[in-house]
Amino acid sequence: MIIAQFSGQGSQYEGMGKDIAQAFPEVLKIYETGSEILGRDLKEICFNSPIEELSRTVNSQPAIMATSIACLTAAQSKGFKFDGVAGHSLGEYAAMYASGMITLEDAFRLIKARAEAMEEAATSTNGAMAAVLKIAPEKVEEVCAAAKNFVTPVNYNSPMQTVIAGSPEGIEEVTAVFKEMKARVMVLNVAGAFHSKYMQTAADKFIETAKQITFNEPKVKYYSNVTGAELTDFSDMPSLLAKHIVSPVRFTSELSAMQNDGADTFVEFGPGKTLTGLVKKTLSDVKAVNVESVESLEGAEIV
Image (cartoon, helix red, strand yellow):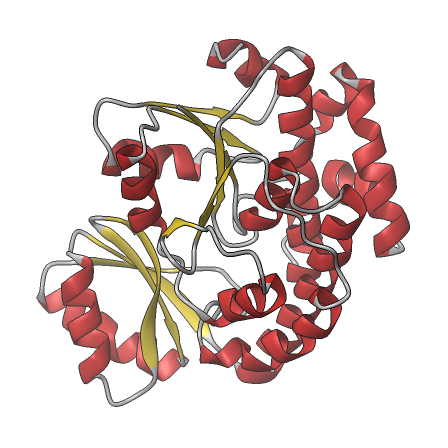
């Protein structure tokens, strides 16, 4: 069973997807569609913007999604097929498109609304995030729950990597505790406390756009960050996607669910290879590769 995975925020880099677009002219429609809906040149953002501009939430989310879909489209043109999809945070929007749940146009309408709402919420809340390494997620939960200042686990990435989010004071408070426990803490260069209650205003604003979108039953298995399992009820996707903005990403649970369902090959589409690394750290006896360029597509041996 083959799973197509899609990159999340933070994976962006200058010039991402450019060689794929040059080698596979059919993917240019993706950027043209995105540009029309965003109201600005998506190719320029992806291929030529400096990293500071590319890393703005309002730019990075549609840019990463476009790159992910472009990489998938290139692979499909060579015969790649898959049985299920999963994304990490914003990667779920590329996954929804790949599964047939939404059109390309609606994928960009959703990600535009999401990115704008989240950037606005991040600007007004002064949140922070950090990755906690070399300690079990249960211990991370205990330390965060005991903190006086707000901080909470938001990304369950692997058995030994959990991302936390909250106030700067909360991050600082628990960092001291984690260091005493011999855990490693890395403060992340992000604009806000994503997937926490600090994003509630973004969720409330985003759902109004989501309610205008038509969601179809997916043509392949679709795994959800919110439930940490295969999603089978698609009756109220707007509410689920709004909840997604303020809920933890249960990626480790998703990986276990996929493997239990028979998944043995994981192909990450989009910039970087973060998800590929998480698969290798979490699961054994599986194949995990990434496709972010012409070279990686040829080396992945997936078609």
